[in-house]
Image (cartoon, rainbow, N blue to C red; front, side):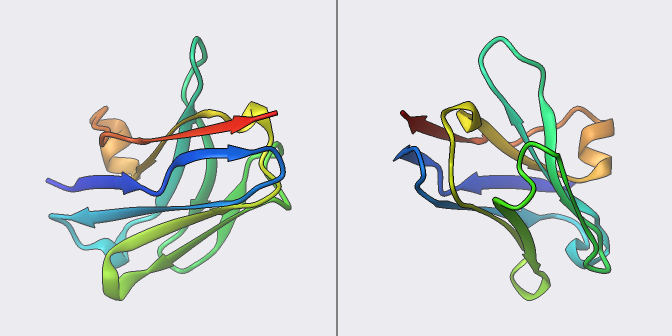
Length: 116
């Protein structure tokens, strides 16, 4: 059973940056596609960025050009570099694999708050 722990969130002014980290344990990290999701109050959870086991990346239109997802297989860690943050980026951010999404398993998440 994969376990995921996110960190790196915080309070930042609009235009600022944050780097989120997610450490995975209990599975073969290098073989898993990984994604970052977010959920704002009153809204559904949405996928914002994904990185395949081979390194290909995809982004939601709302974050393209501002967010970058990377992974370090040696550290079982996936990162989300967030630049030019906007108030609408305020949400709890989670990482996931396709398997944890299918199992509806989510880590504790990390809160990102962007003030205007």
